[in-house]
Length: 53
Image 1 (cartoon, rainbow, N blue to C red):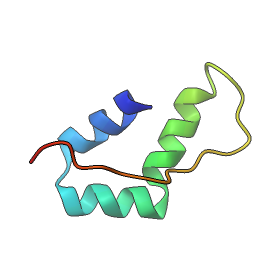
Image 2 (cartoon, rainbow, N blue to C red):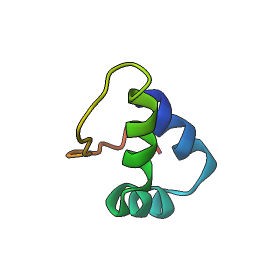
Image 3 (spheres, helix red, strand yellow):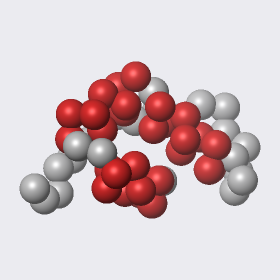
Image 4 (cartoon, rainbow, N blue to C red):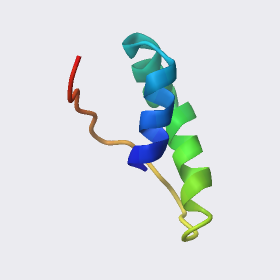
């Protein structure tokens, strides 16, 4: 899941990234990627953390 978030984060600014996390675009991408490994019923982002600026 970290790879999906990092891929999206490097292509957009911070405000756009947080907006996409809250709206659900990035979690839905994570859900699609994780479905290849294990079938999930639901995927939610509960916490985000800024590692560097």
